Image 1 (spheres, rainbow, N blue to C red):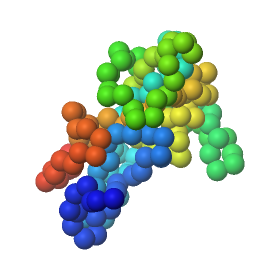
Image 2: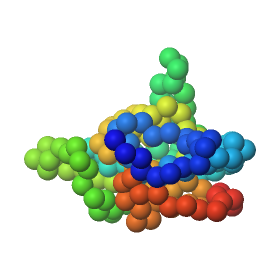
Image 3: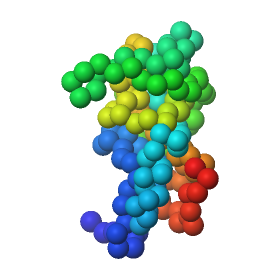
Image 4: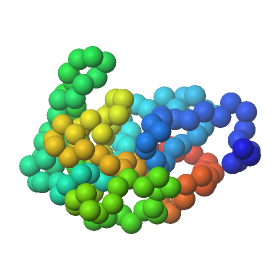
Length: 161
């Protein structure tokens, strides 16, 4: 497999996405920048396609925090921004999630300042709407925009995040 891009030595990812998730990843050679972006001061926004038509009640539960499992104990997530959104019309995944005959789906935007292991997936499941597809669309002030899978855009700084 060939290299996607000629990254400088010492390049590291800020945060991670699990193998079932997709979207924005910021790479840096600045360890301090990594700490700043991973801090609880920087928002991370995700679009989650969920099983079923999400209710206003479920969105309010997400906003107020829900109990999820974390490291073998129960953890109440911090208050966050959550709202129903129209289908963002992302390109189809190479691995199809499911087809329409299995019932309706809907999309929700969830903006967090924390990032526990598989947190968004656990949160939507906790309110009765399991995540089928998860895309990180924003980290701080940097948006995924129209970047495609595997595409790289060099930026001078993510200051202001």
